[in-house]
Amino acid sequence: MEITKMFARKGADVVAFDLKASKEVEDYVTAQGRKCQTITGDITLTDNIQKTVDAAIKAFGKIDVLVNCAGVGFLEIATESTEKVWDLTMAVNLTGSTRMALAVGKTMIEKGGGSIINMASQAGIVALERHLAYGTAKAGIIQMTKQLALEWGQYNIRTNAISPTIILTQMGEMNWNNEKGEAFKKTIPSRRFGYPEEVAACAVYLASDAARLFNGANLVIDGGYTIC
Image (cartoon, rainbow, N blue to C red):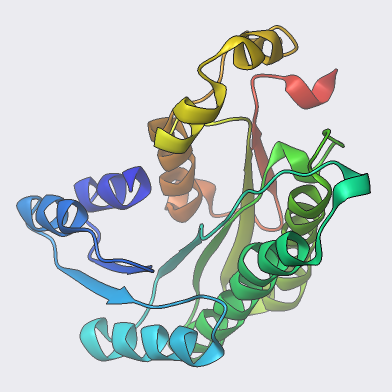
């Protein structure tokens, strides 16, 4: 949500693809004087992805920026790993995001370029307890980012990733505003978690001309956790 809001403040028209429409997002974007088209769908369904891409092209002529941030986060210890959690995590976090990038990237090749920003995680860089499915999927996102950057850089398409630490979204607050969270913060050199606005600022930067030489990069915003 914060990513959409910040892009709107910076002058972007928005196509928001999610399981449910958000009136808050629509109202905010239009209040900035920008256009907002909301499309409901499931990123695990290829036809839903293509429907979204087609609608965006029809509405705006091209897609300049894709922020690939659909995700689920179920945590299990490895000995209790279930097929349900593994399959859903891979379907949403890795397969769905990859297929969305492929669908959008093909239109960017036709239209002269663009910027693809994939949401990864510190869990894709270092091993974390109970993160078998999630961490594996996010590591896949980082590698997918590198592959597309390698193949599509020649088409003026920049593909980059963002790897945050725990971000204090509503879900983050619910899961980490407790003793477990306080203990985890002590392992982070900066001694804090992140805020949605900080992730949004990274996405806007990677989409901007200021980052035009960034391609295949993984922007790690984790307060120094992964350097330890």
